[in-house]
Amino acid sequence: MDTTQRTEQQRSADRRRRELLEAADRVVLRDGPQASMNAIAAEAGITKPILYRHFGDKGGLYAALAKRHTDALLASLRAALDAPADRRERVESTLDTYLAAIEARPQVYRFLMHPAEGSTGTDQGFDVGKHSAPLLRRMGEELAQVIEERVDLGPGSQQLARVWGHGIVGMMHAAGDWWLGERPCSRAELVRSLADLLWGRLAAAGDRIGGPGF
Amino acid sequence: MDTTQRTEQQRSADRRRRELLEAADRVVLRDGPQASMNAIAAEAGITKPILYRHFGDKGGLYAALAKRHTDALLASLRAALDAPADRRERVESTLDTYLAAIEARPQVYRFLMHPAEGSTGTDQGFDVGKHSAPLLRRMGEELAQVIEERVDLGPGSQQLARVWGHGIVGMMHAAGDWWLGERPCSRAELVRSLADLLWGRLAAAGDRIGGPGF
DNA sequence: AGTGCATGTTACTTGCGGTAACCCAAGTCT
DNA sequence: AGACTTGGGTTACCGCAAGTAACATGCACT
Image 1 (cartoon, rainbow over the protein chains, first blue to last red):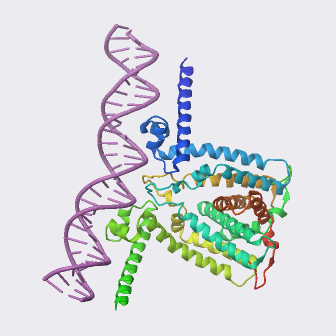
Image 2 (image 1 turned 60 degrees about the vertical axis):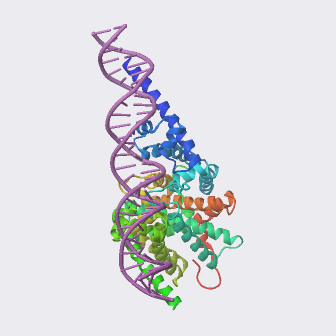
């Protein structure tokens, strides 16, 4: 009976936790990422300390909240990645899945990716949304312009150049960020690998044994 | 004389501003992005309200601070982009310039890109550094694994796959972020453009009249 | 001298994250 | 029945950082 007792209470706590997360979700989606703990607690019909009992601190709540959406997104991406089709088709399907997800729920997306963008709230610790994005954007636009000026892309070249500009900058940024954290190889190797990617080596590579490759 | 007077004071104010920015720079690079206005003011040898007189609010200071580094980085990128060489070489040189910059001054880089990561400070408005990065990282690692499993990349395949995984995810993310904000085209078009990029269309395209293309 | 005006200061308000201390209903032991 | 733990709950508070008001001072110009 001890165990059933325990699981009973565990269940109750978990249910509560889920309720709190849903309330937090509502508030965050309504008020933006600068939603206060007070507001979230109010929406859940309770008061702050309970939130802290459940999630430790604000980061904990955030992490729990992010995990839900993140897991859902990763699941659909995996599905697209594992579909039975040739590589190009799967690449497109994966891209489309991701884009469809962020298109369908931009609020969630903004919350996950640009948490500090929230409206007029008093922000502590510098923002990212208002500043790092601009750097990336500026680089993307600049690169787009160079591409459009100097590469012959046929019809629709302007839009294509912009997509590529932002895409390439994003690639560079993400790879650089990861590389800076893990230092898995020399800079020259990284440069070469990325250039190879841009040069179509992914398209040209053969499949491994065991089905169509990514 | 009125004008000279004005420029005189203007110069003085600008000098002061620059001094303040340099102090802010030192503090931010030392204490991380959660440096308080008080700390910055103290480092500059003055007090808070002056900072507010010069920069309006914390975001203004940040913006000014970011602009300096951003402009410097963009200048070197433009140089690499305009070097006289063939396209592949310029791509590699641009990538290398960027990576060298973030490698040389990781503190600055982290400040520009992940401002909310600062140590143990009391953070308001959810963090991004601790959470959005993980999503991107998880996607990157996951994709890397799929690539490594299913694509035959020859020697060094594991590292190549990881670079590509993170790079492709970054491309998708940045392009998606930009697209979501501007909606310059349909989702299908975006998917197609990105897949084309991955398929080496950049390498295959011809130069425009007027010199070697990007 | 006296009047702007830029520059600087102290001292305050507001608002948030986080916590300590208390509260109370429900079940348990004796 | 009545004392006793225990889990969910609240009020009231602390610390700290952003941002502001009001006051002080040095210096040009008339």
